[in-house]
Length: 333
Image (cartoon, rainbow, N blue to C red; front, side):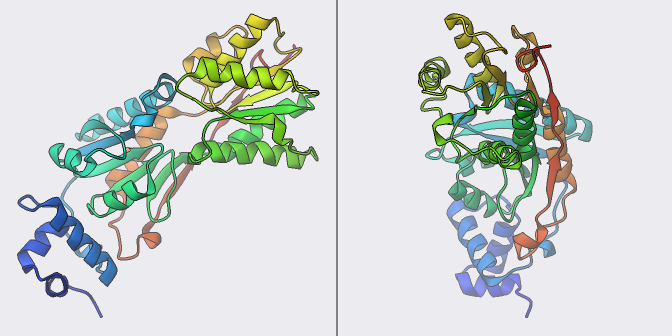
């Protein structure tokens, strides 16, 4: 049996007009009422495609505060630029919101009068749940969650390509330096790293896998990680770093301690930020088209099909290709 707005009104004890305004995100209601109506509508199996969606005129680009650091901004700034270009071409206004888990995010979105939302990078699951109840079109960038449209680089393939490249250059003990595996992209890169070892019949050594204890003080964290690695009974002959900022700090560490790159230690990063090619020696990396990532997300947002009563059925995921860029930090020639 089809669930109607009138059915939701009876269940909530609200008027039909109030329920209609809540589902359409119209003004004049409290956020508590909107969330309450949305939760009941989802629980009853309401078909959201029955709502007439107006043209998207304003998009919010949502970035978690933990991505405000220098290394994260080197990745997300070009992604934002790609989104801005796509919005400008489509005649859509784009605004940026940086928010943490304790901040009134829904109120910020309302102040921006957003018609749709782009979530870039890591977002807490409970925040995504709250955003879903706004019933606004939404796309995740560089993240994946069941029931949401998303655009992601092929992080797992990138981790595999980077590690395979080191193996093909004769490296036998390959370390990985990563950030928090709670981040989808980092966890996928780590899976690619281990897959390459497995494919080449090399055992993964837990002693060679380092999760940085403080990504906001990258210099000190890298110093601690590298001090540990080079003093192992069998130190690594190569390091795969989860991003270029980390890899560039490893390069600096090696220069300071007289470790020759790549003869004593090969180093490869991920993301191919501009500074990678300018490093001494130039840094091998996995290239992501960051502008295209942002633009593709906007394109999906503007053209996605209306959500259904079962979000899982409407999920659309785009995987972007990545490219291995070989430079002197891994190649002796």
